[in-house]
Image 1 (cartoon, rainbow, N blue to C red):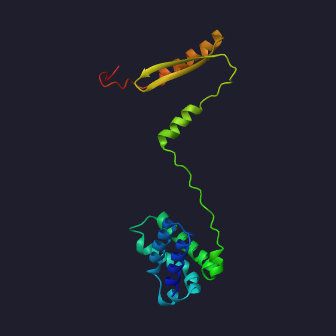
Image 2: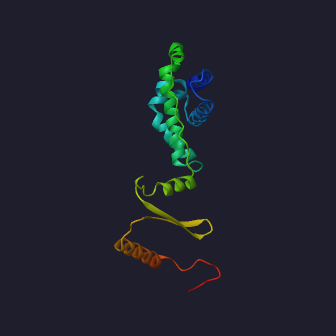
Image 3: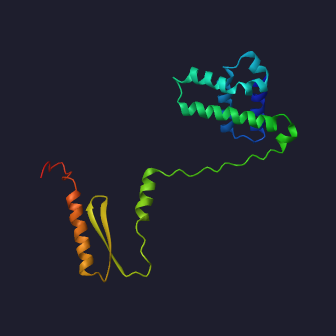
Length: 184
């Protein structure tokens, strides 16, 4: 019976550290979901299971679409498909299982939104190291400040550009958000 063979393969792969515990559990869960939809003929033969895989998947979708998202169902399909592929490559011959070098998956570090925003804020404009710049930090309110870097040999024309930018900021700023000051 193919379901028992696939379950035994998952157990052997987990025991020989080819599947991490979480991967083995995920594949077992997907296999149970698909196994519930197999008829007797499909449950007896890997070939018939593979031949009717898409129809079986459609039955799984129809039965579980109210309880599971489409992306979850696709994930289960990929897990069973990968399990069948691994079983055909390594499960039928014990020497192949012993020589199976499963590539390690690199887990990327998840960066929180606040960390990402902080990193983006620090990426701003990079100034040349030899530039003669003056830097000013102006506290605006608690936790908020404006940082201004200007060349120490600034011209009147450059000051005019900065004034125009400050005027622009004033024109787009919203009405004061201070609760004591409802309208201006």
